[in-house]
Image (tube, rainbow, N blue to C red):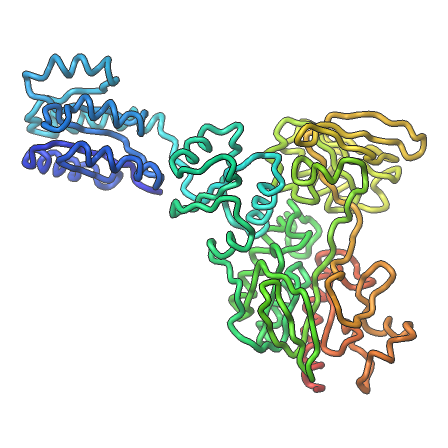
Length: 553
């Protein structure tokens, strides 16, 4: 935390040295002492100090200065730091001006020169003023700030990206926060340029894309090598496990993630059925531990970058990334997981990022404070989101087409939901329309059995429905099932055209796709169990099969 400033101003060098010496002697442990002989120089410095997030606790100013009277200086300094205490250094003849300044600039004290001994005539006064200032002082947030409109899709995208990558930030809604308006003025940012990010070094980006943010915060977006033993595409639980085991077993390993590590599990507020954590752990905590572990073991991590093409060249696989760079690898593990399916109801698309959110419960929870919100979906992700959002919302309503949650959700979550008064489960229900003015305000709910409809006020709608595999980008002849999930192992044998693609004298390994040396692990794989533990197991197992493949070529 930055130390607050005690600022001394006096045009007499000898007096300035004396007051600065005494202040440093007594307060340098907890405060920075700044001083100048020129009041205008001090005034010119204040805007930059404000921009840098510095706080001034006390101004100590001489009254009789040739360029500017002390009272005038304090009056102007007050515009920048209205809460700072104000002390006037005066001679006996300046007493009337000092008394007048008590009303004019809310002077806190006038100090007669000389102040010897300071232990009796200076320090008790300054101590009292500092104690009063500290009683009202709330340290300013020192990290990254995101300023924007609450119901702006770009603002949501930035918040979701930072939260997903475990980057701490402070969100400031320009429509509600005076601090946001103050920061825009200090940094000379127009509201039409929002959203804006102000970084800890006080540099700013306006309306930035995700790639620019990633570069600014030091995320790695360029590979250090042109050839790897294995490239893992997707940093969900399966990809993270593969990254840990690939690094630990001596393979030159690269992990690529298009948005944020952790996948759907990474957004879970509490995973309570993961082996070895009796009190549960958050998806963010699991992700943080796994990324740190993989990096420590030598795995390289690139994000946010997307693989947009794979082509084969002899025994190598060439990956083309979203920045048009290319990477060569001997094997690939596809662990891109699944996306939430879009809710095809009238008006929902219009409010995506403006009250309608796919996942993102932890990102938008604070915006739901004391409001009525709805969740669509009956799986574990929906249940975990409901439990988390119940800490903020006035009421959380889970909408499902089935009669109850028993066929789709773990029992421990069902029990927790039933024991939480704020959560209501509505069976046989679906959203058929969303309405609002600039952001979501109400939804129309239909009973799928009776067809009866009703309108409900909704501050937010969180969607956790279906699992659509993220495989559309794959351009190779990789066999998929009817839903788009990647087929692997012996299941490939049932496809008539498999032998036309498979040209090696062996059967595919358990997690191997129809292209030798390209494996699939986790939820993206057909027949996967859709549990964090099973995805981690498949990620670890895939590295064993990479070893077997590399030994065979």
